[in-house]
Image 1 (cartoon, helix red, strand yellow):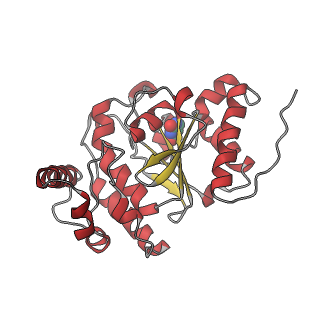
Image 2 (tube, rainbow, N blue to C red):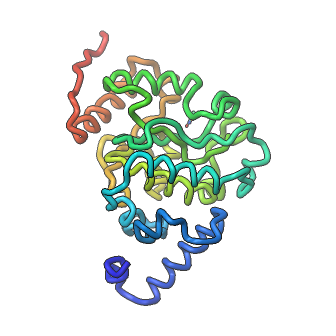
Length: 263
Ligand code: URA
């Protein structure tokens, strides 16, 4: 905690960030400090400022083991409960939390559940999910190796992009989810995920192809699998995504499979 305090230049900044953190916790349905955060140190959840070390204290905690990560994720699900913190709660069938390895080195973050995901309660199980599975398989990884979640946990009507109040309501939970898994790399799939995580309005075409800092975790924005469904599995966009995934594999020091573009 002391190390965190010393990073703040003024008492008022510290007070503001502590107040914001407590408000976020309250909105997340937490009345007390979760034990896992007490042990790890309270993160500075000034969620909206990428340059602040929001997740640092949790991300820096190298001690978390898989079962603890699993428990932390379960606790977030409990805190979400039958969430009605934004208007998406009224129309969803299922809250779609996340799936995969709680100890994953790589996390994919999408926009929000579609109809198939809403029906099944699992992210990326429809057509976009098949495209994502194809990308994961091309990286010679399995879906169970990685962790997959979305910016918002409930389906926006007619699959529209989530609105800012919906993103804001879900953000504390996404942050805790990412802090629990503590991946080495995050891939933001599409505009909504990249812009929400990086707090920017810069288009995905300008964000992609390089790593950005997400509170100490390298984040690679890339095109959304749904976009690839529209452009085709051999399109320039498809190969751009592959170029981005090559960088991800290299950062993770994993083998980079050779893929030849069809003529
Ligand atoms: N699109 C997303 O962004 N997320 C899903 O889970 C499914 C489709």
